[in-house]
Image 1 (cartoon, rainbow, N blue to C red):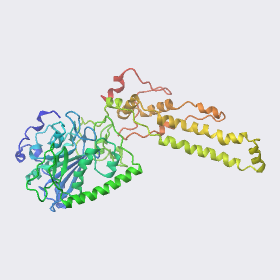
Image 2 (image 1 turned 180 degrees about the vertical axis):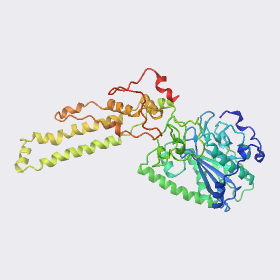
Image 3 (image 1 turned 30 degrees about the vertical axis):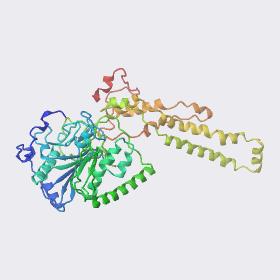
Image 4 (image 1 turned 90 degrees about the horizontal axis):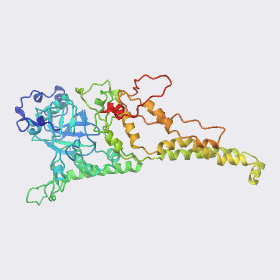
Length: 513
């Protein structure tokens, strides 16, 4: 974000002197009632957690017991980039890690309704040479490296932060994660190159989970340190430097033991999932960020992108639900970067299903003739041993199954083992994201093109193999969208094949620009 006016008027701790009406909106009565039910004070401290994959922002608030409890979860309207931390200016990445938000970072004069600065880069980011500026949580549902909410949502979140400052909180903590740090998610993303970083910030996630207290965050040796305390025999206070060697410190035993117990359970479950063969999340090259399913359902050709919708809940099912705030007309849902998709390496195929299918077919085909030949009497068996009158039985039991199995499995093998080209991946991306594109026609053409020639049919001329017309129907379903199933509106003569102009890139992909 390069707008110079984003931080205007927010370089002062006197947030209470802001005269902007938007910044002084009261906390909604419904939220105040929820605080009363959860034994919270209006001006008690808050803590914020963000999750990209789930596209959720959580506001936690301290109860009168001193621990934090979840007050409200807000669906994120838009975040940009990929799963993983921000590295450099202009990479469109939304930051991940632990950040501190003080009153000077609250911006009542934001160009995006209201906002607060995440504080990126922190000392850890700077120690690694990471760059970037003005990374915000703001309204307007538009993101270029930020976490964007609706205007109504950011008004509530801003008011909660403001009241916590009025109550004496010096700064509230912002924890930003790629996903909820559960064993299931860690197993799914175990091959991601960001996993070492994610395991490091999971330490802080675990500290908060077991204590329900804001973890104390320090940096040394270019890494995070959580809840560090000076040893009993230390004579000086601890001094941390993100680029220097860590001082001698200890973690209070009551915290350390609880964290060890949680991590042991997580690691056991993680190992079980990996041993069980839990699927690995696919790398979605080129898709720019994500959007919560509640908002994606409201936008034509909307997509959740890198965010994930709940199982059993489609965008069509949410289309009639009320959106948590106003979605502006200029909202830009997640779409693939076509250049990145075209240049991405071909994904490795996993021919597990194709290999297992012929094995089962071969056993079944060989078993039937064998049982039939054994039904003959003594003289039939004797003749078979002497090689008399058994040519048909032998051919049926041994030669015939192989061509049958080959003929039935060949189309599947052809489809599953052919490496995807850059052009086919580009076409698949356009089919998925271009509004009005008739996906059913492409499926039929691809099925006709990919069907192998029935060369094996010569082994059994009496019953030529029928062409497999089920290929188009058995392809994986595309991610649901509001306008799934919308065909091409271009009129066609009955029986004619669709005409696609192939000599113009602009004419084919102008809808994506």
